[in-house]
Length: 233
Image 1 (cartoon, rainbow, N blue to C red):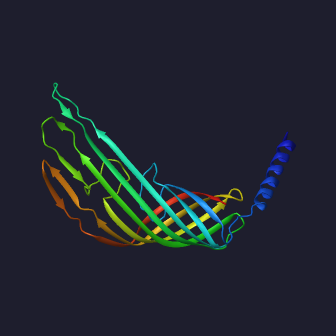
Image 2: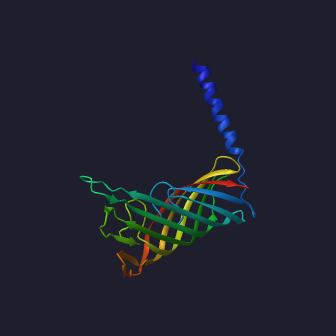
Image 3: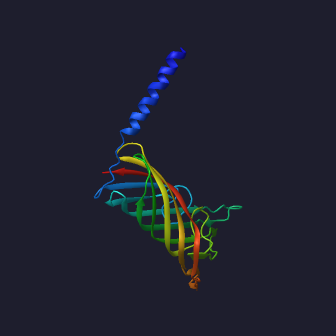
């Protein structure tokens, strides 16, 4: 029995080594890949679960250098139900939000092995966020409808509304499972970030009050981390 177990372990080790030696990453000038990222994407800064990752594509200018474009989007909507008391009629409210991010990066692969390829990079990202909310209320009661409230909505993962432009640096490593499929872990650090908040509109009856936001900038802000599956072709 012991000999059988040792034989199986030996065969497993040999097959693993053979598998490792058989990997030939298709990274060459003109190669392309589709990228599916989970848990954060580049410098987008869209956090939370669900579609917090993104999709993208890479194009290799050389075996060690690639351009990457990515898109990340998330939408949310919810009905705020009216709870009647003693038969009093009312109307439901609602809230919704939309996050959209795009990014462009240049990645430089350095060293590693045939299966593991560390890389550095940098790029630009743009994030746009908006929201709307209308509270539930009794019939006949005038409510205030809000567009782009700085406090956001109840769904986690939505930043304050507005547009953010950032310059970020990337650090990651890619591990090839097969010749055409790899997984990668990556961290993006926001080097410079400039945010232009959206104006908030509060409408009550026929009157709308607009509150302007104040632009802000930050340096060396916390970035995002994520895992990516890349399919080469």
